[in-house]
Length: 341
Ligand SMILES: Cc1cc2nc3c(=O)[nH]c(=O)nc-3n(C[C@H](O)[C@H](O)[C@H](O)COP(=O)(O)O)c2cc1C
Ligand SMILES: CCCCCCC(=O)C(=O)O
Image 1: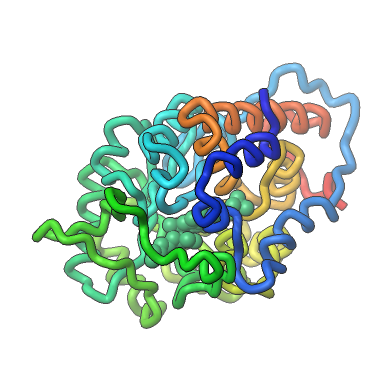
Image 2: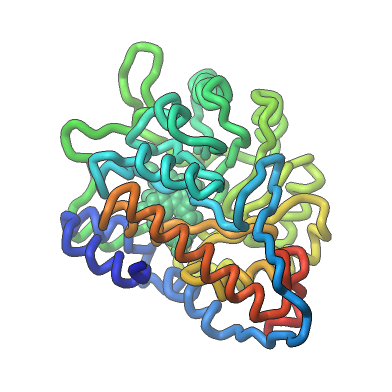
């Protein structure tokens, strides 16, 4: 089984440089992008011994979805830049791994087609200023059996991504489109970043759907408190993989205060910089219920399509199982904050 770094190297060779940089890059000087991984390195595990860990079980349930391991696939845009099978390959490998695929609003495959191969999937939304269109997109996802709606709230405006400017990467190649942005006339609309969205709009979003609603991109504990008070069903502690606000706190550093404020009232997912089973265990020990992985899955997809995604997910599963056992835990729920320094 290849390492994530090996898969990334293959992906880099295979991809157009502009597309590789779109995936790999972050905003500004990429300080937050680096900080996400660095914070995992800075924290170490202090394992417990003699705990009888022969029977381990990685299964977790988050927002009504059962996952065979506490790792889900983050929403990431434009999978057909990586491989011609695009989101279908990613969703199928994720279904076979028994976990959740979060379909991006900016998917190059329509959510209805993703639903044909995905088992349990969620849908990520950038609310658009045209409410009627936004409601239609949510209905499409719900009718396709998405199990949760993930509203991204860290993107009031586009992050400044220098690598994209350098390559003048602004458009998808011919033949690819953000298929969930087709309106009733068949036109593909541009995705607007929701600059005018406020807390007042959450009540409307909640009313548009019976799906659980999660907010993705929460870093400030006060926003976490407010989201819980507003009846939000779950939070994704995330800085968008360092692609939005450069200089933002790393996801792992933001987690403990949010855990403290939320106090178990809603599930917490952390994403950003998770690259190994030990990383998964650190995030869970510090209070996340599950983690999301973004780029590693894209590297697997670009390197070897569905098989490459499967390889990434299986590697992370095996590493997580090993790290869990070596920390003296049988289940994710047995991991406690004292294991991390
Ligand atoms: C190429 C790429 C595209 C992304 N597209 C989206 C998106 O469409 N919607 C969204 O909410 N987040 C998007 N993200 C952010 C991811 O959901 C996630 O927060 C991030 O990738 C996690 O960090 P990691 O890549 O270090 O695992 C994207 C990330 C990448 C790398
Ligand atoms: C103009 C299209 C915007 C798609 C957003 C994808 C995304 O979130 C990313 O980080 O890139």
